[in-house]
Length: 45
Image (cartoon, rainbow, N blue to C red):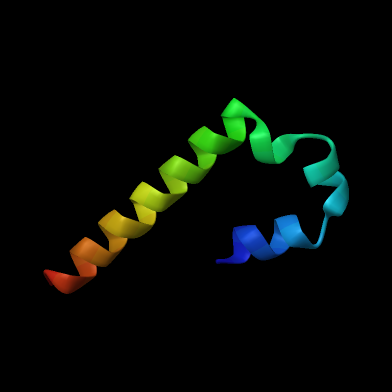
């Protein structure tokens, strides 16, 4: 997952609290659902 690698490359983001922010949690949840729905579509086509 490219998003995680990007975050790992920027420790300053983690220090600033982005990993704990509500916005990040929502973004991660949306990204996860999008990935799941994409997989679901791929399996059903």
